[in-house]
Length: 101
Ligand code: SF4
Image 1 (cartoon, rainbow, N blue to C red):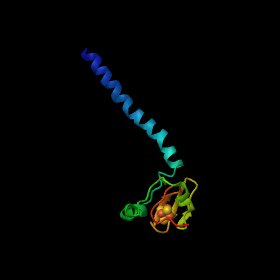
Image 2 (cartoon, rainbow, N blue to C red):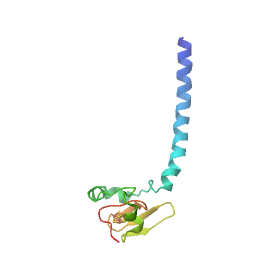
Image 3 (cartoon, rainbow, N blue to C red):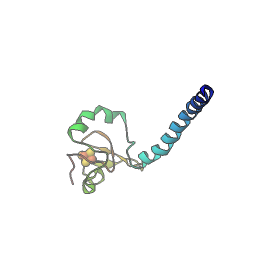
Image 4 (cartoon, helix red, strand yellow):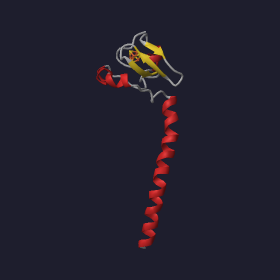
């Protein structure tokens, strides 16, 4: 019984890092495709502003997404752009209270 337990533990210890790596590899492209992986150091500095403006990575109202906002500038094909109000990278599908047409 003890040797079975050790074998199981060794197996789990060996497979756990591989499983985590595979999971990350499977999820990361999906996040990038949705623009959820948009990040830059400037964005982190405006985290308080983002919170106060209720910035959401995915807009609840698609008609008021960053893509359709006056303050949005397209930046890359990954779904990330720049916002003049939040001073940094935002998701093309995101939104905030400062949205303007
Ligand atoms: S002001 Fe708000 S809705 Fe407009 S681009 Fe910036 S984050 Fe998006």
